[in-house]
Structure formats: structure tokens, C-alpha cells
Image 1: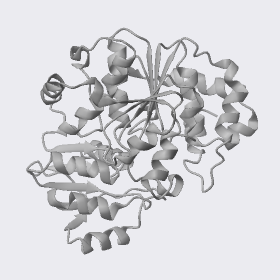
Image 2: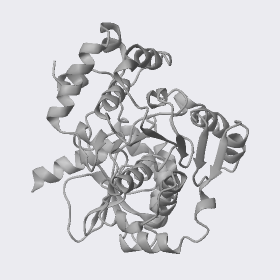
Image 3: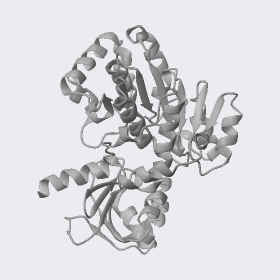
Length: 380
């Protein structure tokens, strides 16, 4: 069975998770991996993992190192999740490592590993002979599939409410689960909940604050403005470069001159911004970045997201919500979404096409952005 057919039959989520499954699967085949000469960087948090990882992986690659970056989810094609030395993994290499993994894993693990657990092992196989590996946690931290590798440093992006069904209903519970992924050393990025720093300090690990590295951030701000990135990405850049400093490497912003952050507050066209965010923290950042304009919000949401809170946050910049249809069992019932929009007194209609005289924000999840991009291709 080829990789596409195999993954299409893999569940993305389970109602109950066996947290021992991935560690046992990895242990059974760890002889096939040699990361003894590789620096492992683990990125954990609620928001900003993708951009922090992209900044860091791109920078290290431009320094001349062999770099692998594992991120999720993807927008248009699975290959986006496994980035090696500046490009997404090729179809041929992906198929080769899939067949190898099928040969070395027991039938039990092949059948029982989740989509993300299996693809994490695929990434490990793809990252042979890397100098640096940047691993982005999928959900949580302590029990995340990526946490089976011992890391040299953890980067902690902003932690907020998300995935409460799995992580807990308080910031303390959520942060504890995420921070327990730290092996020995962590750099804590910007946080909106001060208690996170206290929780981290009580772990008996080496904890650094990213602010210690950039007392003067004027050059970084100039870089962000020159790239026309929103200012909220400044803290992600600082966190990424804090890891560069941790490894005693030089800081040269010219190495990031050609970086692109597709899907992360990305200006697709003059009047269209796409962003794969899907929680209140990202909604606040986007609202603040677009404070002086009104947009048509092309939107939909998974049923387990606090979309009422997200829409309430975005309301000041919304002219109208355009509901884009998505065929996925996790997507909220349209009637319930419409009810919330009515309660918030937000005008809405179905998404049909783009008017070049209006501004648009495509937001809500990777699936929303993916569906929109596919629709744009059909329109053109």
C-alpha cells in the first residue's frame, strides 16, 4: 500500500489515547536511528510553533548545516510536514521511507499507531545525517509523539487554552503537560499567563527567558517591518534566534532575507491574507494587526474549538463572515455556527468568490485555508 492510501486509512484522532504506544513503537525500532551527532530542538506551545520552527530551521540551513524540520499539519500536500535543507520531502523519498518503515515495524504497531505517530516515525527516518532537527510538537508535550527523542533544548512558545479535552481545563494543567516535555534545558518565549514561568522554574530544569538574549531588539523590528511581517511575529523570531545563541552561533539577519511563511498571516494577494490559526490567542494577534481595517472573514471551525470566543475577538475587524463549506466530520454543524454569528450580531453568507475591491482574511484552520486555495484554483 502506498503512502497516500496508507495515511488515508489512518485515524487522525482517537477518543482514548494510549500514551505508551508511541514510546513502545519507537523503542522497538530505535536501532534504525542514529542521532548521536544531531542536535534536537523541540518546540512546544499553543501558538507560534510553526513560525518559530520555520525561522530557526531556515536560519540553520542558511548557515550551511544539514537541517530537518518536522511540522504539522500541512496545507495542500503531506510533504510540507517534512522539510529537509530548504525543500519539502520528495514523493520518491517519502515513498521509500514509508516502505522501509512498513518493513521494520511490527504489524501491531503499523495497525495501531495514529496518523501523527506514524508520520513522526517517517520524519525520523527522513532525517538521517542531519546536524539539527527541529521538531514541532503536535498536541501537548509530555505525551506527544515527538517527545520520544531526547532533546538538547526545548523552545516554549505562548501557552493558552486549546485542546482542553486532552490537556486539561486550567492553564496550570495545560502548561504542566506541555512543560513536562522539557528534558534538561528550555528557553521560554513570550507568555500571556505569568504562572507559566513559575511552573517552569519548579521543574528543576535549566530555564532561560528569551528576553535575556535581546535587550535591544531594534534590528529585529527593522527586519520584521522590512519583510512586511506582522509585529506579533517578532517574539517568535526572538525565540528562534535564542536557540541560535544557545548553540553559540552568530546572529546574521541576512540569512533570513529570503524566508517565506506561507499560511502564517501570509499575503496571498493584495486583498487576501491567509492564516492557519484557530484559537483565541491567534485571533487576538490578528485582530491587533488588522486594527485599522475591515475584512470579509472566510471562515469555518471544528466543533471542538471555542469559535464563539474567536469570533467575538475578531468582531471589531469583521465586515461580514463568509462561511466556506468543508467536508469533514470534525467541522461544526452549519446551523450552530450561524446561531453564534446571529447572537454576536455578525452578518454572514456563504462564500462564493472574491471581489477584488474588498479585503479578505481566510482563517479558522489548515483545512479552511486548504479548501479556500483549492477553490481559488478552480475559480482561475
